[in-house]
Amino acid sequence: MVSVKVIVTLKPGVLDPQGKTVRNALESLGFKGLADLRIGKIMEIKMNGVPPEEARLQVEEMCKKLLVNPVIEDYRYEMQEV
Amino acid sequence: MRFGVVLFPGSNCEMDCQYVLEEVFSEEADLLWHKEEKISGYDAIVLPGGFSYGDYLRTGAIARFSPIMKAVEGFANEGGLVLGICNGFQILCEANLLPGALMRNRSLHFICKHVTIRVEDEKTAFTNACSPGQILHIPINHNEGCYYADQKTLRELRERGQVLFRYCGPNGEVSETSNPNGSVENIAGIVNRAGNVMGMMPHPERACERILGSEDGRRIFSSVIRRWKGED
Image 1 (cartoon, each protein chain N blue to C red):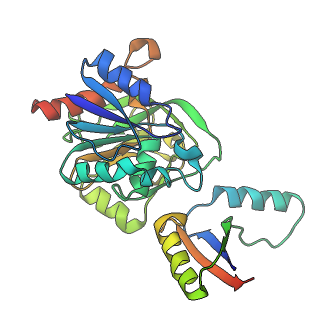
Image 2 (image 1 turned 135 degrees about the vertical axis):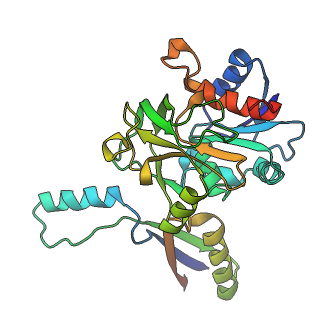
């Protein structure tokens, strides 16, 4: 089985009000030195009976087609055989 | 004139659109289930507001792959008039029929209230019943209405006159204080380059009768009807 973790982040420069609010909350809890905090998403995908190279191609396709909006988001992924 | 109003799972403004087109304008309006693969005999298509597919992943991201969307794309490419309202606007952006994206409101709050928007171009298929710079009172009702586009896209939108509406104050002033959701340059509605596909976050179908507080939304639908009849 191939296990894939797709990490989707907001592009630099795209406003992240949620990240900003969380950062303010951490500061009000007394955490110091926070330069930035941005919130993204992780999608865990498990694939059966797909060779790793094929899985890689499929994940790329999934990201381009549906999982990521290239106008506002970047992505990367980690893949491992389990 | 015959309108098709697309019903996605999770749409919730389709009946308001149908009601307005039939009862206020005496035009035909059919609901089209999103599984339809063909749309024929329609003069304009409306993608209504709501929460298609529960807004999962991103607003409009899944609806844009509904079978009917291929037909909507074909209809748009042939010059057919398409109106995306709220979730419909989000779907059109996800489908790349309109540039940019709609993101979470800057305040992180769901906003449901009447706003004022300024007509930025009154010569289009969707605004020709408005006067230049007219201020319209139309409600918004969204959590993801913050329009975003990169600088290059924004410049193109400005240069080609594709910005149709901007959130404004009571006297038409466009400022940060009149921006309800953080949209770049107060953008509330845009049209594609060809001028036949429009998306707007405010709900004109909720402002077509005096009893609802405003009739300004009528201008949008009358514009489309006038354009179709060649009266504009």
